[in-house]
Image 1 (spheres, rainbow, N blue to C red):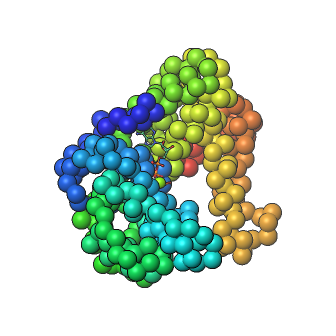
Image 2 (image 1 turned 90 degrees about the horizontal axis):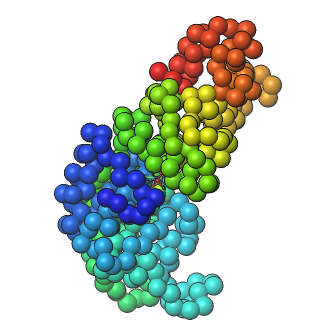
Image 3 (image 1 turned 180 degrees about the vertical axis):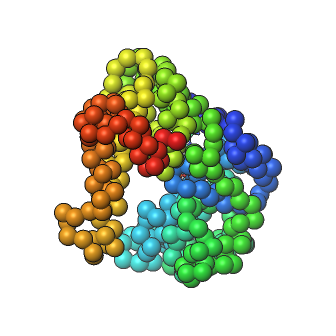
Amino acid sequence: MQKNSNIIDCGTSAAMQRVYQKIDQVANSKASVLITGETGTGKEVCAHMFHQVSRYKDKAFLSINCAAIPDNLIESELFGHVKGAFTGATQNRQGMASLADGGTLFLDEIGEMDLNLQCKLLRFVETGTFYKVGSSQLETVDIRFIWATNRDLLSEIKAKRFRQDLYYRLKVSSIHLPPLRQRGQDVLMLAQNFLQQYAKQEQKSFKYFTLEAEKILLDYQWPGNIRQLKNVIHNLVLSHYGETITADMLLNTLAEEMENLLPQFLSTPEVAKICPKTIYPLWQVEKNASLEAIKFCNGNVVQAAKLLGIGKTTLYRKLQKWKYIK
Ligand SMILES: Nc1ncnc2c1ncn2[C@@H]1O[C@H](COP(=O)(O)OP(=O)(O)OP(=O)(O)O)[C@@H](O)[C@H]1O
Ligand SMILES: [Mg+2]
């Protein structure tokens, strides 16, 4: 499953073994595949790898991100348009559907697609035929489809934002990427690889994690999954020198991460409605102060506990409660 030197083959956990088995089973068929999983679990990476091991590997791999393109442009992006089809359509344009003929078309963030277009997409997937925007000429292509979403499509169907018929069509074959917290030792392999990769890129000499740091890597919940792990390791490599990443360095960086997440929480409409800007729930004040102290002490929990006027065991217990450590 090696795509390029930056993609890490990280499948020792049982959860990933099941993913690899599934890829093996369906890679060479023409069946379309739906890849689901939390944000940052590697859905896009998986789609690329899928193409690489499929019988379409020598043909194009094209992707379209439904969340990144305005609704009124997706149809033309997907199917192309003819000159004069709409204001600004000054010449004929091929869409992804034509360009990916014979290869793989990856439709990312499919849960964001407009309901009207979902209808046209269903016909396209079922028959391989489509019309360019503004054209009445039916075109036919042979494409392997891969889809991805981090939305729960069943809830989207209930909320009438996603077509049930399209869902069942997409779901012929599906792969669920597990969150990093359910991948056991994989986190260490990924972390080690990212450490090597970023040490080389930033010309630093980092090689190892201490055992304590590894324990934190294993125990942390990683809400942002592989993307978060990658960013944390990059940040660590940029901020420190030496050969070894210690638990203190890691805790400090994770504390900063949580601080960045807190304002998002504090600005939820529910909280904003009931509280003036300076009043926060006591547990949040406590958490803020603790993270601030750990950051001030460069990740040294014992010193931070002293500054906070509490015992180190109490602070460790709180960190456990906030899911920093087990
Ligand atoms: N096996 C891997 N090896 C190296 N890097 C990886 C691997 N899997 C994921 N990544 C990295 O993690 C980040 C997130 O991956 P990706 O974009 O595929 O996730 P995603 O599930 O599509 O996320 P989102 O739901 O937010 O779109 C990317 O920077 C990607 O390069
Ligand atoms: Mg993605």
